[in-house]
Image 1 (cartoon, rainbow, N blue to C red):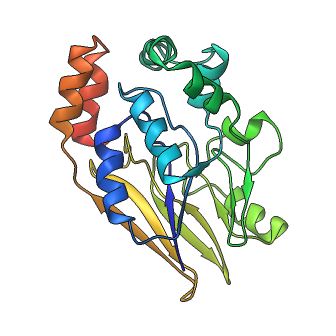
Image 2 (tube, rainbow, N blue to C red):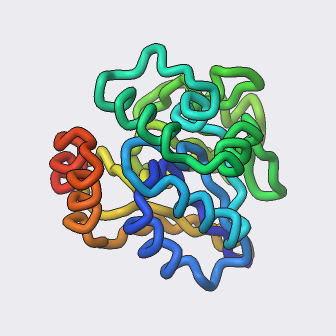
Length: 223
């Protein structure tokens, strides 16, 4: 069985479409949150999530848009978040508000930011060098998947792993290609993947909607 793992799409339909083309042989796809925010295709992205039955946890941007609470956001994130809330279809706003904080599967537990049962699950950032990673895995004794940092990495601790598939819609690890991962359950192997997509198409949409130009330029540099 193959399990697709994605995160941090952030309304970037162009990147998501390319990634899903590479996941078409997966039996199921999970997302570590932040379905919306930043980029101007929130309705189309959620529609695709529903159509493809992609299961997602709630990210901090999902929470902010659903609850109209942008406290702590930088100006770019807040402007894009308010634009997203204003343009989002009512049924999709409801869909966002009903996303769970965590999902437990037979292969891994998935959160947006960190393993927690409250808002810390989508607020805390865990970077690749964080010493708490091993503690989380050893304590919970389960494979763990998070997103939030937009940095792709995979660490093993014995037979268990800690995975961040990276960001589909806005990578921040110096690689502009959309990031994702595939878990082969039969081989017990996680494969990290990247794919190029048409950044210019996203930038054109950003400019057309009057969103901050910064959101466009950062995509080319992957940061």
